[in-house]
Amino acid sequence: MKLYVAGLLLLQLLWHTLEQAELVPSPAGISNVTQISAANINSTLSSNEVLFLNFYADWCHFSKRLAPVFEHAATQLKLEFPEPGKVQLGRVDCVKEVALADLHDIQKFPTLRLFYRGQPVRREYRGLRTSEALVKYVKSQLRSAIVEFNNSEDLAEIDPKRRAVIAYIADTENPAYGIFQMMADRFKNDCDFYLHIGDDLDPDLEHKGAIPRQLPALVFRPDVARTHGQDEFYAGSLEDPAQVEPWTLAKCVPLVRAVNFANVEELIEERLPLLLLFHLPEDDVSIKDFKAIVEMQLSDQRSKFNFVTVDGWKFEHSVKHMGLSAKNLPIIAIDSLKFMYPFTKFSDMYIPGRLQQFMQDFSSNQTVVDRKIIEQNPPRDEQNPPRPVSTFKELGPSKHRYTLLHDEL
Image 1 (cartoon, helix red, strand yellow):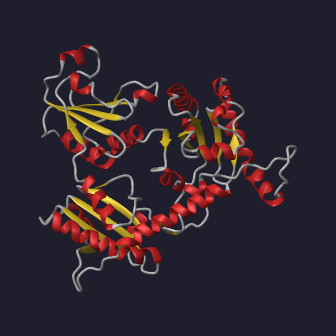
Image 2 (cartoon, rainbow, N blue to C red; image 1 turned 45 degrees about the vertical axis):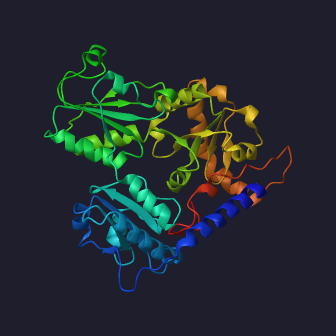
Image 3 (cartoon, one colour; image 1 turned 180 degrees about the vertical axis):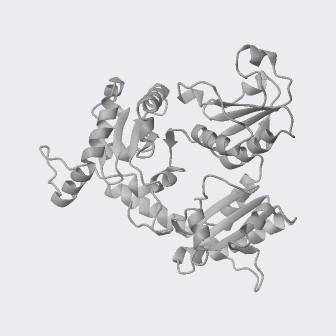
């Protein structure tokens, strides 16, 4: 564990070194970053294809560090996209604009959020704070998420490891087209979006029941390589975004998520205990079965737990921290973000109700058990082994990069 923490600190130090490499000041008196307030945010959103916002506080050390880097990125983007309404960078003073900060659920400074065609991209930016990285990110978001297709052969090219939303709309004048485009803009980093325009439905698809007979229509295709799921038709109104958005969110951000070092910070920031499946990289069967059982038995726990699958090799330190190794994979465990609780054995997952009982026991006893562990600090011996400390808590937002409004998870 000491080696892991030392490595994590070294990585954070390297991150800071890279972030500080481009503190290039803007020309005196000239700024390409717009100050955003409640009075101008709507007009700024509606008049720019991309709006990239820095939510900051003047008293925050990391906000002060980011300011010249953000300004330099704005200058570079202005040179590449000089036409008005294409790209705009803005800053929000969260001390003065408390309502705006609350509206966007700002929990740390600085927080970077991008809006595309007026819609917030679901995931905030968490990458390197260099002007080069910021420019690269903004340019990567300057794209339509929608891929148009004509026939069943085109759909056969869908990545089986990616979730997809497929739309069939007669023409672009239909209100469903604008709503579908809005969903694609918001969730394009979570799902792939495909569109067929016209009422010339592929007879082959229609014969196989792959599309409904009435247009407009939406179909969700799961990541079939890693789930037992099948295509699902959207049953609500395609002309009502209040119905389409929660459906799209539920499909594109599934109950069970695959975790890696790129998205783990976002997950930990949600402050929910984790039910984890550690698996071998090629073990798709265990992943599919775990997802199916969680969806059938534990969907009512979504507000209380995050359900995740984890490559047991990439997160080997967590496996070893429980006194286990790769030969024990697949492994199920709960990480409370304080301590880790291994499940008895993976095969017990298939016993009806056993995984449910494991989670209920955890929820009933976790607070008491954690308090006793902290107070007693039991000796390290076989009769009274200590509970493994959470390894995932260390992967949440770092105090070396952010000023956190809530210090403890």
